[in-house]
Length: 178
Image (cartoon, rainbow, N blue to C red; front, side, top):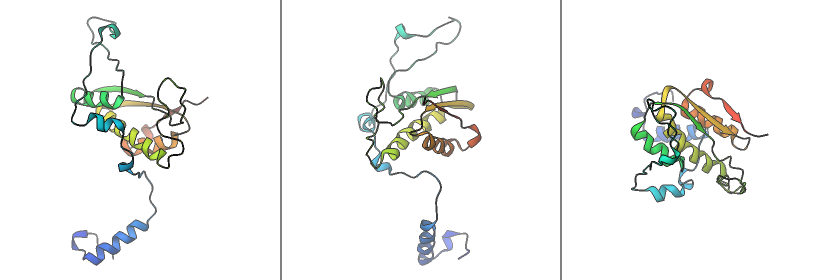
């Protein structure tokens, strides 16, 4: 079956082609999205996150230059808001995501997914995918994304970044482990 236009295939030919395609080895990331819903998705449904200015935390070094913005909170919400106002205008984004180790003694939640959860990496990948897609939309064409990660998800993050940003050459991961 050397046809190249699937519209000309019969039903049986399409079924045969699907069977062949499903047997092929695949390289890439595939995960169960329906098993990876985050709590914030239900909480945020139908709502728009709002950033509130706190003048006490303002970072202003020169009154003639723009104020730098420091955002505290869930990065998904912040990135969502910025996509309305700052799309394709950010020079640098630094992320330090949870390392998915299950540690409970960190200041920030590093217990993202139970270590025995069979969808542990899938859930973490979906968590990161949602945020990295928003970050990509914010970055200028020559913008830089910096990620800190340890060995628990370094390989997965590298493949995810390659998939989202389509360029292995631009990917450098900083390993934060001792």
